[in-house]
Amino acid sequence: MNKYLLMLAIAIASFSCSKADESDMDSDEPADAGFEIWMGQKTGSTGNWSNLRWMVVLPDGRFFNQLPTEGFLNFNANQTGGTWGTFTMNGINGVFTNPYETLNVKKISAAEMEIAGYANHLYKLASVDGVKLSGKYVNGIPGWSTSGSYPYSGNDAQPMIEFTADGGFVDKGAFVLNFTMPYQYPERAPGKGLYEIKNFTLTLNYEDGRKVTKAFSGVLNNKVTVTTELVLVGGNPFYSK
Image 1: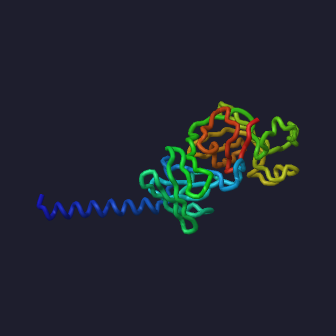
Image 2: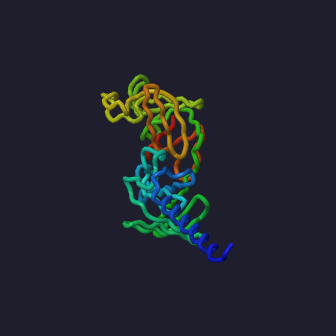
Image 3: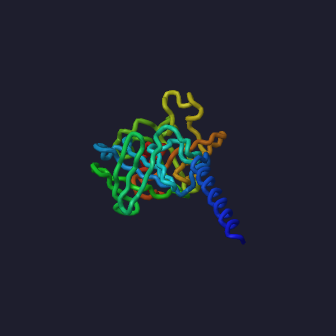
């Protein structure tokens, strides 16, 4: 091939790859399973699982600083409710930067980073793909099964969801806002059906046709197992019986 034609072909190929990369950056397609989620407790919040720092890091270095409570099935570059920024690493040192904050970090291990100037660390969430749970989980009441302060009887609507290892669930009102009127908001009402867990998302397929998705993970870098005592659903702590 004439050398000038060869140079032209290389230039065209290079331009095409560049345009493809730009298209990927602006894509509305959900992030693939390669994204990472880092979480940590904010300063002064040890043991308080409602005061968390989240970093959702995409393979191209972009990061989102909030947890989408509905999960990641539709997560993309247009995600709202937080701020987008960039994450860069140079050896074991890195920096998270967005228009409002800069955090310098140092990687301690593949699943832990310390933040300069902060006592609390960031931890990479372990995958939850295919996890099955077994037991009752209650929204926001730690130690409810042993403290004697659980204020609901067996037949009441209550902030509990029970999972079985075969993929079934019974939601007794885990997302209800007013337990005197548990069916006030049909999308939050009690029900039952089948569940699956993938890409840090819990999908609840109710028998009445509803499909509810919630962000789902363990705490810090702890793996979720069938006997895990604490999980995060939609960013809220759910405690096991």
